[in-house]
Length: 400
Image (tube, rainbow, N blue to C red):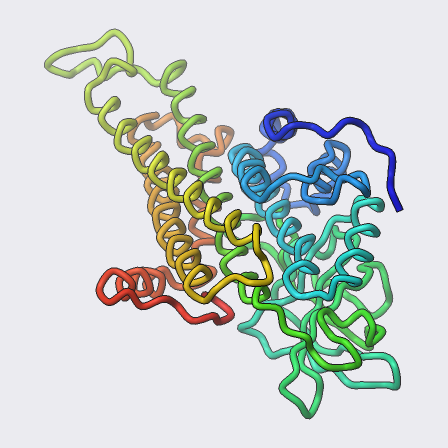
């Protein structure tokens, strides 16, 4: 079925929409972070802007954009609000999930429903928890269990579940409606940072899914796609981009404060008229901007590798997948370093008055510090190190 839509926006026009959304989020970002309420209004804003269907096929009314554009959008939104940048990035991953794992018929059906319905996705797929237990009941699968993290799911239209079929080693992914009795959110997300990501726990009790909706399964047997090993590198690249966005936002916010409110030190040997003329302030901003630019450049390089894979999704080689993963790992490390440096050192260039809670400069460090613990950076450094030393490429896992 062909849907008549407005003329397709260009990538730059989508980025402009993201900038408009970011401008609205930036106004009360500090107050919303402090309140720690469910991001219901923020999700509505993402939907109204069209950003939710950015990756959806144009024939169903979506933006039909590339991952490069989607990742840039994540950066722009995260610069204003790191939590909402994460929500949007995770949504893009799960909106793409059918393409990663599903059969052609499933991909078509899911993308039509999600794009036309303007769904926001959440996920309950934390691999460090025990798998959900799946039992078979005729032509249905029944999911039961708990997950300690379910980012975005409580404010989403659909949630991605993953579990293991009881008595087998078969992992099954399925997309289910969020609004049903068998899904209960624990409301226990009250962490240091990324406070508006709705990332608390979820209990799954008797959620039924038709066998036909088990992603990638035909006649109850999984039909593997080479491309489905890319889901982890893709989510790691999403991490990279909202980290970079948070760092960009922190640096820009601090620079504006320095220009307008920070005072030059009156007891210096060479007293300056403004703080922006202080040599040490210029030096720190130069260092931080260099780190942020370097992380952004690696993020763009990694996105280019993902685009190359998308061009032949079903025939991607192990080497292509491995190279993308190791570059994404390096980009993630650079983004973490840049984000933590910005979050810490902006106080050196803004001054004591900038520590007032009303300014909210602590948000940038708290957000990066919280999410960068998702998986140990040390293992990413070792992964990149093994590649540098021997050309070893990382094998697919839940974290590589």
